[in-house]
Figure 1 (spheres, rainbow, N blue to C red):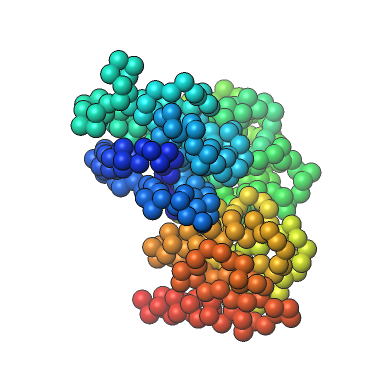
Figure 2: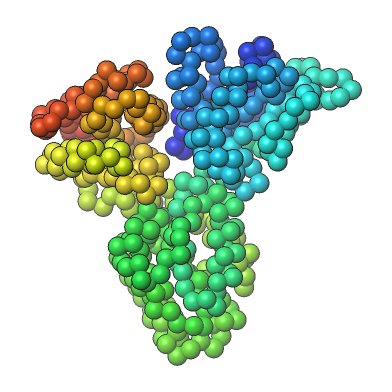
Length: 452
């Protein structure tokens, strides 16, 4: 996969009447992508015609949810297809609406116009035409068709770059109001380029150290904009970054810092003399946010690996325990399971509704999904199990990923094929022996590491 955190790069949404054309288009797209980018793009294509079977919603919905972007093959039959409308609905639900699909000027949805149609929707989204009004559809072997495929590849490469950026979280420190405009400008630029900028609310000293750590801990880099006015909270944020081992990237406003107030002068001198700043810390130059960005963005490109490394410093294998933290019985069950994992010397990570699910899916050594209740219907189990199954299939190619397992009060409620993922039965009172198959997989991988 070109885009981290997804089972596929693209999902093809099309009407069944266009199946032959779509097969040819897909092959041309894959070939052109390989030539232009030197990499193979992964495309989810309903070649098995799941729509004709009883289980089509489950397979198709999983395909939509686990793809980085959706390509819609527009034609008159597309606009009359209930299935295509359902796929768009799933996409919107997964990303929280149309705004959630947008990254900079791109969307995770690209229109491929196969034929002219009198219908249109989401008019701001890019539309690449494979026809013209004079001659109709471009022949598959025509130069016009190849040019349109090339445009599609170029658009997708830029979209994938922006999506990939979003897996890098950066902490942009809040400070004195004299630099508020520069901070807003930098935040807008980074967000527009797909980065996740933290904190995601107006964080102040009154929120306390725990909230500061919560916002800074998942970030790969910290960024400080400094001027002529001293702000105690800036110093507190910087000290916390050092304590967490987060590289400190700092920019000093050339005009505002010419004649700093006495306390700020001392702070800047103290900062310049520090030799204990985390590896990767650096003072960036430039006279404006524009020139700062030219130096800053290359520093962020390899931050995903640094982030993963910084999230587990204990040396223990890290298990992401996935459970529904909105339900008290699930939280209580998770506490029991966490104790069992701790007794086996595993580090346990939780999402706790703080938006770190995708990060933890990607960086944990193992995944354990817990469902201790048996309420029906259970959309949470269906959707989260899909993440684990597709995630395990994708991450098993990574040397740092070890194992996955389901721990369910009613294993029969798992309607998706689990493959080689163990499905274990949760019971109350809980016995740690229940997790033995999971522990065996983890111990096997730990022993293999020790032997290398």
